[in-house]
Structures are given as structure tokens and as C-alpha cells.
Length: 288
Image 1 (cartoon, helix red, strand yellow):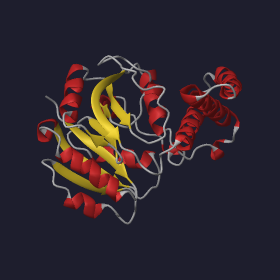
Image 2 (image 1 turned 120 degrees about the vertical axis):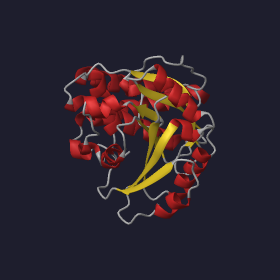
Image 3 (image 1 turned 30 degrees about the vertical axis):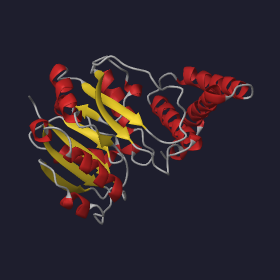
Image 4 (image 1 turned 90 degrees about the vertical axis):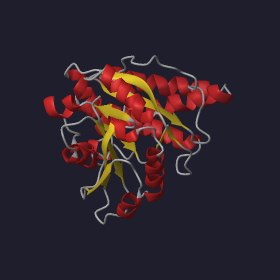
């Protein structure tokens, strides 16, 4: 069974990184499925070096400093730092993996060796809308680029070594580098599949509450619209969708309560994000 590399990018979050590494240490048979772990610190001063050095893990852990600030450059540093042209599974530094996570990812890669594998991410932030809870996917089902990300996602070596893809550094400050790369992979005929390799994003004060959720929803849709604008795709359809979401969400929010009221707010946030991404100057779009 082919092993894979775990890639983690981090910036000024030592306690969250320590928690992630601790969960990896408790993963069943980690050294059987994982070749090594690469932690890329986006702090030029190397603020999390001590956290990585102190971690007790059954696989090699490599610490790399990437001084160019942003989203894309640290991820590219993971790719360039890996050995043996192995697959790379990106984890966010604020996630915690399940004990069978590595085994599940390895099984998925063995079954779909040329596909990007999007694992399951359970969000536990307090005050977030719950109207989408309970949606299940069949293991191995094919999903679109906009349904995936780099959070708990395994990329086969074909993405980097055969297709030659890298994260576009023009998204360093805005985010959206993952969606852009996944769309380019789809353009090449590549597959993206979902698999129940579970990790959790525990509650965090900075992300708790409905307002935090709405901000994330608006930023995500804004970045997606920006990407579509640059690719000259679906601009008219997205503009109509944005206007309709704002109008319908506003009207629905005035007469609903509970989860439907929350859903109305989300609809407005997504619509507003689409319109901002389509019509604001590019240098004002971003800030995830």
C-alpha cells in the first residue's frame, strides 16, 4: 500500500498545531500508512518550531519555514519539500483527526489512486447553523471542485508530478487557491471523490456564532465569484444568482424563525458574496 505525506501549514497558532499533532500521535498504525509529516510555518521567525520539535510521533516530522506570507506559498512549500513523489494529504492546523483516519485515507487512495480524496470534516463551532446536518454521502462518490477544499484532502502525486499543478500565488492574500487548483484539475479531466476519513474542527472562540458563519459564507462565495470572473465563466448566471439569493433571503428572513431564518441569512450572505466577487476590483476581493 502506497504511503502518503501529511502536509500542515500554520501561522501563529501553536496550541492548535500541538492539538493536531497530538491527535495524529493517537492515530492507529500511523507509521503503516504515513511516510512523514511536513509542517510549514508561515512565520519567518519560526514561531512553532518548538511545538514540532516536542511532538512525539512514530513517523519523521520535517519543519519548514516559508517566509512569503499567504495561503498558496506555504502549500507549495509542502509539495516541494516532500520526498519520493508521494501523495500529499493536507490538514488544517485547527483540525483533529479520528483514530482510524490514516487507514481510511489509505484505503480511499488505494481504491481511487488517481483521484483527489476529500475527507469528512465535522465542524463543532457553537452557534453555527445546523440546517445542513445529517447529509450523508456514499463513500467514493464523485464530487465537484466547489464541494472540496484543502482541509483533510489527499492529492495523488499525479496532480503535482504529471499535471504539474501548483497553488497560484495570486491567491496568497485572498484565499481561494484551493478552489482554483481543484477547478484546473477538473479541467484536465481529473476526479475528486469523497471518503469518510473523518476529522473534526473543534469549537473556537474566533469562529463561534452565526455572524462568524455568515462571514465565512460570504467570503467563500466572493472568492469563488472572483475565480469565475477571471476564468470568464458563468458571470451572468452568477450575477442573477446573487441578486435572487439576496432578494429571496431578505424576504424569507422577514417571515421565518428558527433554522429557516438562519438559512435565509446564509442565502443573503452567499448572494452578497457573489455580487462582491463579480463587481468589486480584484485588489479588494479576499480576506478569508
